[in-house]
Amino acid sequence: MDNEKIKKAVSLFLEGIGENPEREGLLETPERIAKMCEEIFDGYTRDASEHLEKTFLSSQQGLVLEKNITFYSVCEHHLLPFYGKVHIGYIPDGKVVGLSKLARTVEVFARRAQIQEQLTDQIADALMEILKPKGVIVMVEAEHMCMTMRGIKKPGSQTVTLSTRGCATKEPDWKNQFLELIRL
Image (cartoon, rainbow, N blue to C red; front, side, top):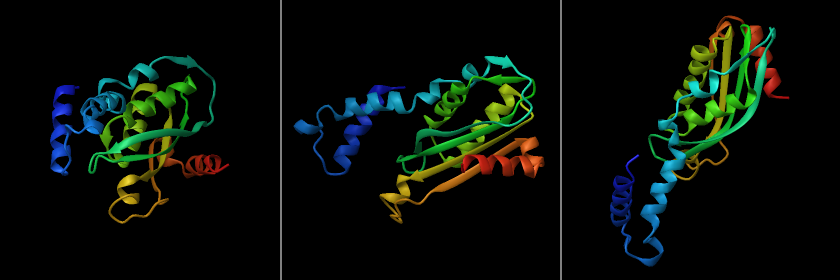
């Protein structure tokens, strides 16, 4: 990440909206924004495989579900936050991953500028490629600030995306079980 470019861009942005970047309250804002970017966009420097490669042998044949994983991301179209919950289900094929690793995988992808649809697919694809389960289903429910504080201005509206892979795509009962369990 190039902090100097970020600081320069923030100063130009402040000037562009009619502010004085030399004003006392704004003097340290470019530095603060650069530090914030290191944190909220650190997904570009991380790889999901670091969390999913350590697995444990398991005879589990049924659904493994981790629900209500809180996430925060940034919309690539408006650079405004979107946030909500991710629900991940998978059918193991002889091995499972530590439950915290699912949440860490969400963080890798959420900490990038992108769209919700892509976030949902990235999580599902990483689980299929690295964990190699029989099937994966990922649901993301999010509120987008580009819809609540600008544009249409509809706070509380949620966008829901769903990605299925493997047996989750072919077996509707499995998808129904997942949807039923996340609503409990």
